[in-house]
Length: 381
Image 1 (spheres, one colour):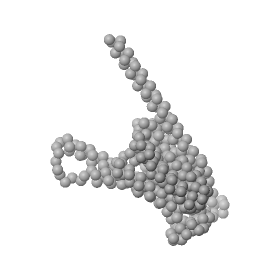
Image 2 (cartoon, rainbow, N blue to C red):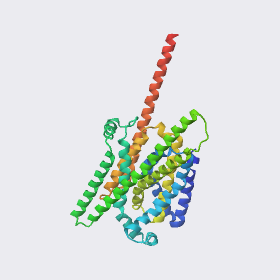
Image 3 (cartoon, rainbow, N blue to C red):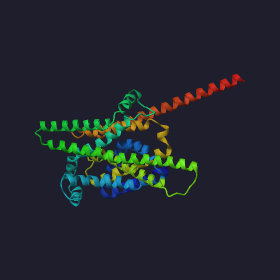
Image 4 (cartoon, rainbow, N blue to C red):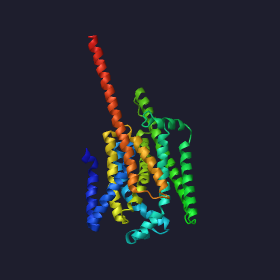
């Protein structure tokens, strides 16, 4: 099971490390290995959240996620995205941007760093909306009940998550502008960039998430209708097959997963510059990490881990909320990648431990109930 799920990840790891040695020797090998570990540690919460969405898809779309999705994640976000950012921010053509990335690495790193406020605002708002919509929903299973119960009641207010997200964005942009103004106003225009990018992130979430939810609801309605028709009688009418709706629903879920992965990868791409500014080594290291995150997502789905450890999804969403805040803060202040990674690991680890305790408590309760039932039977005899 492990080899089947992680086989491609192992193969890509071997190829990537060999390519690194040929490209830049053993120093490059070490850099790629470190970047791979960095990406996995920063994106573990991504895998848990992805698993919650991917388990709704069939085997075909899970394969698409592991093939086409990986190409988008590795080549799109880890290789093409930084070049596109440089091309847009520096008003240059893509070929010039690639030439800059390969031949003038320091200038390339500088341009990507300058684009960080826009990247952080977009990704931060997208992730913040995921977190807010999660905590404002009334769920049967609650992890931190003392916090989640009142938040679920507040969640009955329409559009509350959008209002809070916009307030956070305004406060972030205003703080950024004020700070810049006190230092001579050289970055005041970037406050506008933060606002526009943040709103773009919010709109992206609402469009992709809304379409995904719409087609998922349509799929459920179609399945219910077909079930009722099967109970009445089997007839061969020209009705719209459920496969089409399933395809639409799965497609928009897939699109949602890709945007989600992109938002998660922002901190990894930016953080990678603390280790190297060589775009080839970045693509190799982060690409290997992205493969493991995807394989881990499928593993969690196939093993039913989220069903066995019910608080894992909660911990992952709290980690998303923390990452969203961290991204917004990094618009003005530098936060080390170790802190970013550790926050997610601690929250998910805590939720896993809480799930284990819950399972033990339920097993003990069932055992006590079974022994009491046996006692009653024996005493009746």
